[in-house]
Image (cartoon, rainbow, N blue to C red; front, side, top):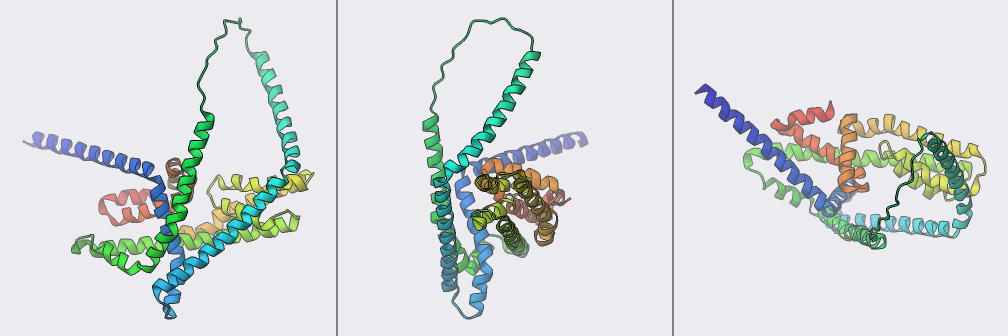
Length: 355
């Protein structure tokens, strides 16, 4: 009997593990195929957490919550539209000045190509001589233009979907915050509502801390970049600082992406090496300060994700959702950690994420 019971227990454990693996695969597949919907919802949730303190303050001064939500949302959309219009205007001006940027880019590309040709020639000298064989011509059907058009249509559809639904979602989340909270509580049995309430409160605190802390770090980076670019006389200093500062928030690869805008603009103005070295050094120092001082002080104390978990989350969510996955990886993983901390069977995962 003991042997039979052991076999039954082992079989049940194996079945449980298999069921969990299948469930995890289904969840990952759903996150991949429903990426546009999920990303739209998550962006709306983060915006709602960011704007909620303003709406709460308006409610405190006796402004109805629905009216305060509409007012805050309209002001936010107006600011985003002004910023987008300014960015488009600068991009259009950059396009007009493109011939002046093309010459230095072509010279740099030509120098790199010459170095590669020399390296390839030296490598070919080391290879053993091979007898020429019959040439084989392969004809493959190319649909590069069609593929490019289809991919652009898909990206445009995702952007239009987000731009259309995010404002409505944010408004409803802000205006009906208490009703949504109460309805969420009703989804769970009465015996579990206290634990669910604590979990949701911790999730709220984590997301709000992350959004506000990240916004503050981004503001500091944009301001520092703006002052530096203004000091060296870089054109479009504020907009370049805005783009570079926000890109610098991306862990690890953000500093590389932040180099691109000022370097492109600097090709027209600077004809010596020192300004470019200064851009490299200053942006690298700002990235290190933000990653090792500002983010741990303003965000990391509440998120508490270890470096390995952070890196894996960036790779995983970036693979699933592309560029938006890199932006949403940290808050999504932080929410998963909070949930794991409040579910007894998942607590080892939560401890691993914060170890």
